[in-house]
Amino acid sequence: MELEDRLLQRLAFGTAGLRGVMAAGFNRLNHLSVVQATQGLAAHALTATADAQAKGVVVGYGTLIN
Image 1 (cartoon, one colour):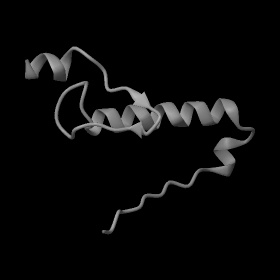
Image 2 (tube, rainbow, N blue to C red):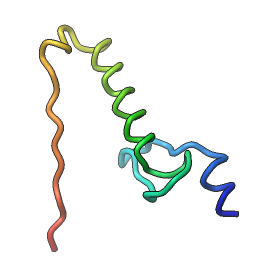
Image 3 (cartoon, rainbow, N blue to C red):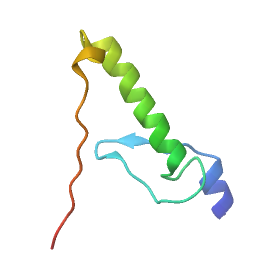
């Protein structure tokens, strides 16, 4: 059932990163999942890297052109 698929599981981080269908629900890629992933990455950087807050981060993206 569509509703069970969206709400009864969490979107998983795999070897290709955080990927999923854009839609509402815990098992979909949406605003909440992006905020949570960003928050987790920031928390990890602060504990894993000396002076991470002072050093900052660079975030980039690319597009696939056929």
